[in-house]
Length: 179
Image 1 (cartoon, rainbow, N blue to C red):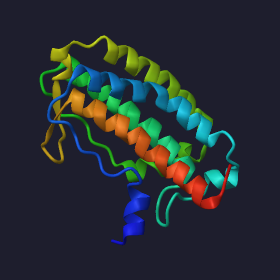
Image 2 (cartoon, rainbow, N blue to C red):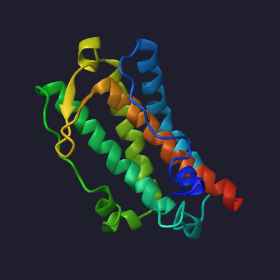
Image 3 (cartoon, helix red, strand yellow):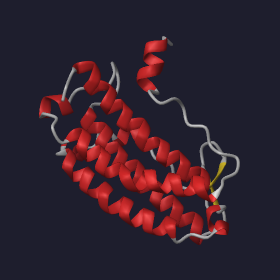
């Protein structure tokens, strides 16, 4: 894989989960999750329909698909948080994100998913800010990899996930000289 393709796929690098966490790190993850929908809205607000339907890289999703993917992915993450908080090490439900990126609503206005992300992140942040240290250590298991994830790792992953896809959009805008 060429360096350019790697950079386009992972413009901020790959996620590396923390082994342990300090409260300050958790607070920073939650702050990033809180502010993400407004940042996303700002970056896509001025894009035309043609620009929204431009892939961020060759063979990649369009900006529109990325926005709708973010809503789908973050909804799943929120539900996974709830499962981990209410069940003993649940095995979560996996989903095929590539197939989800091709369902009919992924052609809809991006404002649909931006509005969903705003409400979802408000609820997610309210949940996260009320969690105890023991709750942050709650875990779930992914059915395909059989790996377990603690909620503090998941919070870091989704703070990164938002930044990762936001960088797909901002780097495309920069390369295409879009305002």
